[in-house]
Amino acid sequence: RNALAEARTWLPQAAQPLPKSDPFAHVLLELQFIVALRSADTDRSAEILEQSKLLNSIRQNPVLSARWSFFSLTMSFQKNDFKKVIRATNDHSMLLLKNKGWLINLKMLELLAIYRLKDADWLYYKIESFRKMLGTPGWKQQRISQIVSLLKAHVAGKGLSGSEIENKI
Image (tube, rainbow, N blue to C red; front, side):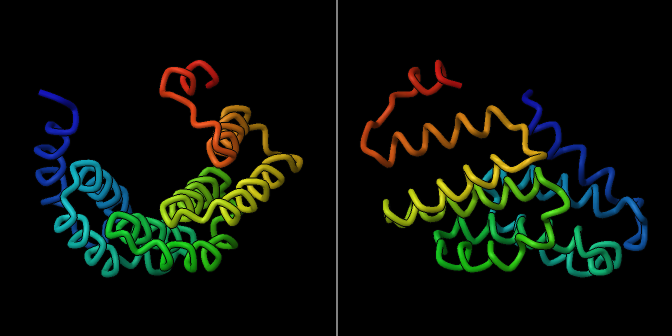
């Protein structure tokens, strides 16, 4: 069996004994959400998002709250509500600024949404802004910079094949 199928079986069993006030309940809920999202189970993902709103540990922690807002945005992205994703990325950027990994996730989701809207000029501008953000002190993300270069090449119409992309990364 694959790991995703095993996680789908194991996670509900692990969640049963935990009370809603358990300080680690949000971690288990996050794992459940990721499994549902990767399984393309949108109904279960939406159900988990609703459950997350009931946990005090998420509601009372601004970073966790922003993270779950990001998860909600991934659902909006899956539903092709790209304009909602783009508007919300600006609202959540400051909350996630302390955690650079999550900020990168948010910015990448924004770039994907703009890409899906097929607005090459705006995408190029946002990619360049993203590149500049990564160029500031404290951002040593060579792989992310390579991804930005590939996005720019695609926007410029150079269309790279999968093997060419893998070779560059």
